[in-house]
Length: 83
Image (tube, rainbow, N blue to C red; front, side, top):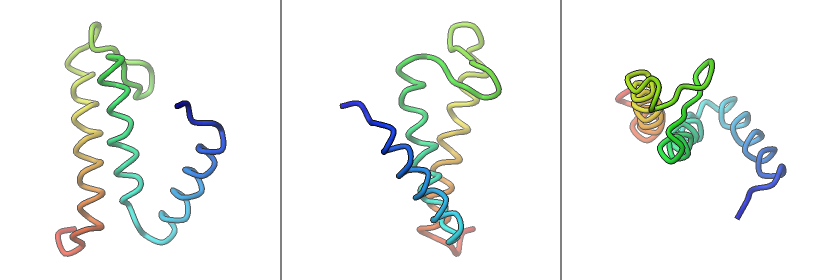
């Protein structure tokens, strides 16, 4: 099922409210969510499009960074004593 524009507005509102409240979990989930289509397409976006075929090192560095950032943001809310 394709998400409509309403999903983007809801996601944006949730991200802004949780950021103001000091929670990072939703940003972490978003970072992890972004990796899924990147794995499927072989394309990532940093400042411009980076493809797995043309620049595999940078592509994988971006993927690993999104995963590490996502997990660390989630863990910082779940285990605040570690932050």
